[in-house]
Image (cartoon, rainbow, N blue to C red):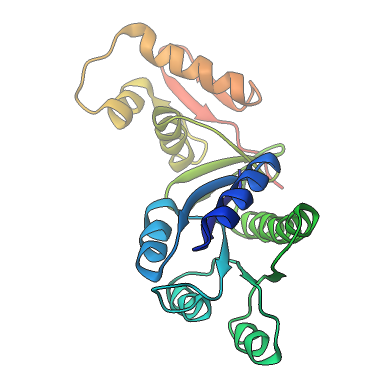
Length: 229
C-alpha cells in the first residue's frame, strides 16, 4: 500500500484530505504542520509520497522544506497551495515537484493527481526490481538489497524471517545440496529445535512457490532447482 505524509497546518483541510486518501485506498502515515515534525515523520514512517502545503504558519515554507528533503531523499512531493501566482509556481518548479494542487481542490482533483504519481512510483519500482533481480526458477526472481527479497514476476512475495534465512542459505549454495544440519544452524544457530520444525518451515515455503523449486534428498539435505534463462 502506498504511504502518504500530509504536511498541512489547516486542520479541516488536513483531515478532509486524509479521509479522501483513505477512501482511495492509500495509507496516511501522519499529519504534520512544520519542518521539524516533517523530517521526523519521514525518518520514522518512510512515506512514499508527500502532500506539501507551501505556506505554513510557524515554520519555514513548504518549498524550503522540500529542498531539505531532496538533499537526503527522493520522495515525490505534491505541492498544495491557494496561491498559483507566477513567483510561487516558479519557486516550486525549481524543486521538481511531482504535482501542484491549487486550493480549494475537489476529490477528483486529488484522486487524479495522487493516482498519477502513485502509478509512476510503482512503475519506477518495477523497473528497479527488473534491473536488480536475478532469476531463480520459472517466473521467480530474487534480489539482495537490505535483505533477500523474492518476486513472482515483479510482485514481491511475503516471507517470514526464517523463510528468508532458509532461502538465503540455499541460494548461496548455488544449486548444491545443503545438509539439514547446516540449514538448521544457519537459521537457529545453536538453539535446539524439534524434528518437525524444519519440515514445517519447508512445507510453508513450498506452499508459496512452485513445489519443484526446493528439492529434498532424504537424510542428506535440500537444494534449489535453479533454471537458466
